[in-house]
Image (cartoon, rainbow, N blue to C red; front, side, top):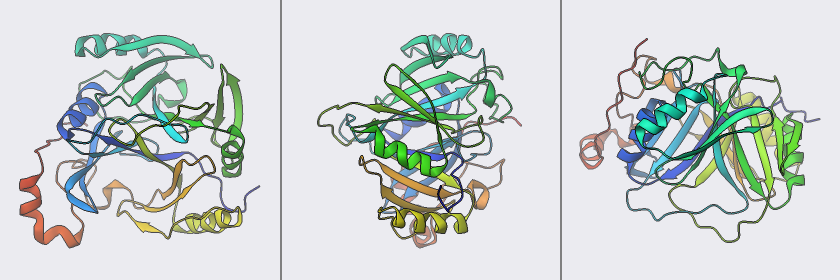
Length: 318
């Protein structure tokens, strides 16, 4: 058992998209997620870094995108996270089918997986998405964006799918995190975080070979796991080093601190702190309403704002 504290779930998932406006419209108006943060790529201030999540932008709900309008289409490969799944209340898929039909979005299902009903679709850039009925997420707050009603709205991540050449090493790492093997079905090996139910608690491992893939829109860059604070993160730096991994120095992301490493199947993992969270520079009511820049880019705000396409957060009712 690891000497570091158990890792309680997924913190966020980061992906690549094409047009920022198409991405923004889909995740707010089709999926009904809250736009919780509008900032920029710290290495390229003329590219957005967009965050979507639930009402609070809680750890376990945030998907982030680096959108490049002219990026090539990507395709998944073995050694990557290949799908995101979202938890909705039990009985909510009927509302989703009606909503997606109205929006003209194709989907497959519903079908049963591990005793739960699942709907599959893709975002405009081809990123695989699952909607999973999960009674364990019903109590989680979400924004009232009038996109879907209370009985159907996404509460946060259910989990993610990782495609690996060899399940063993990744499973061993998850077990070191404190996650437990739950079941296997049709080649999908499900692992669950400590604490049972809630958001961001599931990783599905699939052993297969896609062949050569390509980086681009519709692909996941990395998956981040959550720890409460810097002390817990430092314990994991020591633990990972002892296990033979090479974690990076701590990176300041303003809403969390981050370390990165590649697990043995090549997937880029991050361990991110819950603190300080997305309210570090905006109130709950104001999340996503302004372009937030790091201090070194503030002198260039006017030039940056003029270069970026306009994105206005939908008004949420509270």
